[in-house]
Amino acid sequence: MLRKLKFILVLVCLPFFFSSCFEIIEEITLRPDGSGDMTITINLSQSKTKVASIMLMDSINGYRVPTKQTIQREINEAVADLKKMPGISNVKSTADFTNYIGTITFSFKEVANINNISKKILEAQKIKTSNVSTYTYNKATTTFSREYKYNASAKSEFNKLKKEDKEVFKTATYTSIYRFPTTIVKHSNPLAKVSKSQKAVMQKCSVMDLINGKTSVTNIVQLSK
Image 1 (cartoon, one colour):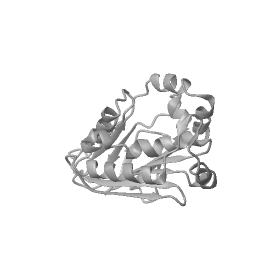
Image 2: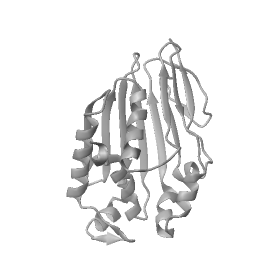
Image 3: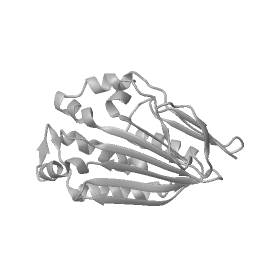
Image 4: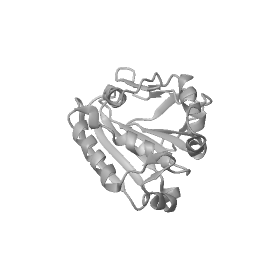
């Protein structure tokens, strides 16, 4: 069932065709009972003119450029598969081929459902990695956590890429935004910033820093009861 669950991978791989900047945004909105919503966005809008030109080509840098129809088909198949996963509902997606922004959103019954999605996507693509984040929420202590353990294999795999492919990541950024139903008492990551409302925390970093292990996105967030 999950062999066609490629939405995120399709969007993440798109920048490989272009020596241009892109942004990955991960958003989680948590409810008091531990359920919530998640949105993943791949934004190539800053290079939309160049991307549009490349999309007219058959291939570049040894890669076959996917057509809009192919990308949309993969997205539709991914949505259909996500809808079948336990604890996941309200799956929706958008594909803006004018600004080149793709999103997928869904609701989860409990935070652990997010971990299952990441695992299944990687298993479906036969990708072995120890860099997958683990998300947890303890309702008794109202503690939300994201644990990310850096593994040097990420850098090793990056070093195997062609020079032109490595260029893609130089200006790429990753942003995480977590919103909560109550105020944040404290959080463990000094690079993360709390909103004025005290109900959201954000961290933005370079994808290269993640690859090289220079930045940690692990964060334990203690919420008020």
